[in-house]
Length: 417
Image 1 (tube, rainbow, N blue to C red):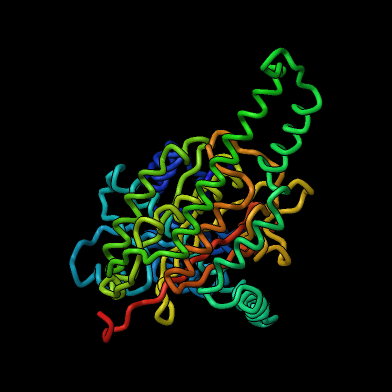
Image 2: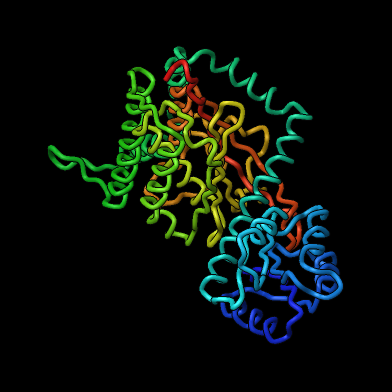
């Protein structure tokens, strides 16, 4: 994995050498510039995600360097280095739009924590930027509207979903992994079993296959029951503030650590705007946790090992939105991500884009989990979508494809609280 790059603008040679040494020890690739002009030239030649700059430098000082960096297409996350600690001065430099500051003499542990947070903030902001660009492109082509309209016309109102779901199951029953294999194996049993008195003699390997597929079919039927119950019964909904939901989501992410550890994934979760924390939503925590687990598990199963799964939480036009981004492994045909024509199909029972089987995750691998998620979100009067985004802001080569899985839940109006 390529080391993270930092640009340090520091005119004091000794301090510049010390900063470079400390940051390299923490796994970063560091470029040191002796003044603001040299730093700006280095940045324009090859942009850096994070910039540490001294305030007082000859030629182009820290304030002038920050102003110049703010005009670039890709803005870095900036940390100011200063020897001043007066409150009025600190307020004035924070108003420049910097991320944070460190006061001389620099404490190594403080610097390491702030730099780590700066990279996490850069990643969050980068994901939000590419998402906005992707949304603009999709809106221009009216793709989301066309797909949403087609989906709604095919699914109809929520009260008819049960009928549509089980009609789909009826037509697809023998096509799913487990069911189709079970039918084939039972035919083999019929053709190869030998009669010995009152009993049939079956090969042990064949019986083992029967048992494996019976177990999978049983899991499938259990999930059918859960989906049917979710559709047919009234779920318990609690009114939670976004602050309460945010705390719960963080707890769930910690609970999911065994799933993340399978391929050494980690989840980077954004913070909510403090102005939105008091807003409320109606949510059924039981089914939403199961859906959230399904989404995270899918992100892990289909992500490159050792990669980061990014979760962006935000409020837009009275909708709470949770978008989970992952860097996908190639599909069986070599393509990356979810083709546009399949974005709605993956929520259908038994549909699979990949031929992979992920035994370590202990889940069904033919789309039933996402059918449950789709049902759960509709029960919340919410929206669900999955689509690709192109990450053009990664400086390590060609644009990367990321998959975005977004759930939107309505904010409760004041009159309903």
